[in-house]
Image 1 (cartoon, rainbow, N blue to C red):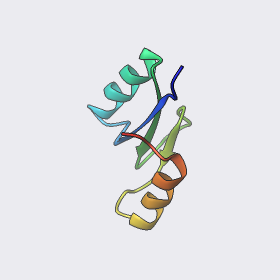
Image 2: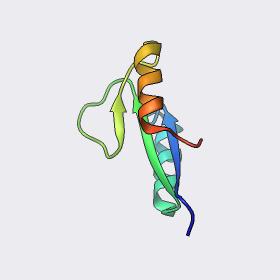
Image 3: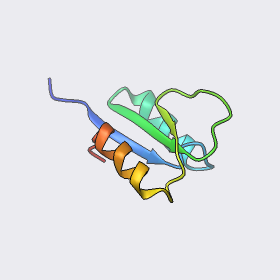
Image 4: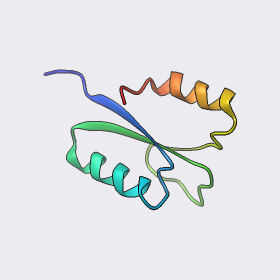
Length: 68
């Protein structure tokens, strides 16, 4: 069995992003992570981050090491 691909969805609590993240996670084929600017409460694999902070963004990308 091959390695599971990691996917990072930016804007994962937005109108399209939450649907994309949910759909990909439900397939069970991917390890799905999300980035959202304002998180009211804890969501699975979702990181609170303002992507205009490029230093933090690159840190998160390097830490997660997504394939997509």
